[in-house]
Amino acid sequence: MTLKMHRNFWLMKSEPDVYSFAQLAKDHTTPWEGVRNYEARNHMMRAHINDGVLFYHSNAKPPGIVGLARVTRIAYPDPTQFNPASPYFDAKATLTNPRWFCVDVAYDRPLLHSISLDTLRSTPTLQSMVLLQRGRLSVQPITAAEWRTILQLGGITVP
DNA sequence: GCCAACGTTGGC
DNA sequence: GCCAACGTTGGC
Image (cartoon, rainbow, N blue to C red):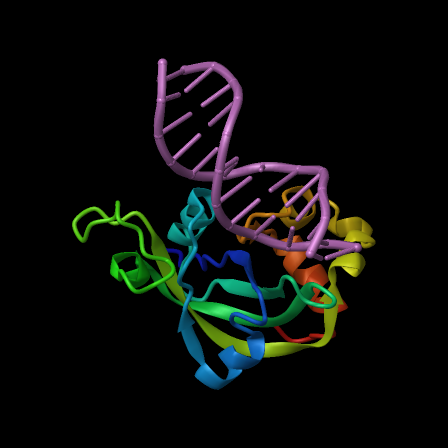
């Protein structure tokens, strides 16, 4: 009888003007609402409780990874798709047939050193990061090796 | 604020 | 099912 620990890793982007890592520190946990891209959604639907999350600030100066979070609730229908007042409203979504899903993400810790996009680009072992291949995907998988490298770059010794 | 990259929509 | 038009993302 084996108990396999499934822990996957993700990078999630947010514009700090819209929702920052500092805000997550205050909120402790937040629904990762408003993802309206199928591939990003599909990644979230594969997330497990306790999966590691790299919190990435896009449209920031500089853009980069600023902290760690983790998944605390697996995918469920994103409530904003049903709300006509929300900017994320989707008229084609129904309660019985939702289109969009979100996960809950909890604050973990900041990186000691934020890692800019430039630094990621210039790190040889990170060249195959989805971020560097497919810039626009807002929820993307991170390999265990990339996770370790990034924590090391960020000055985190005990994950 | 610009604009390249690229995902989505909808007419056919 | 193609693909042109359109909208969005996100670095710069």
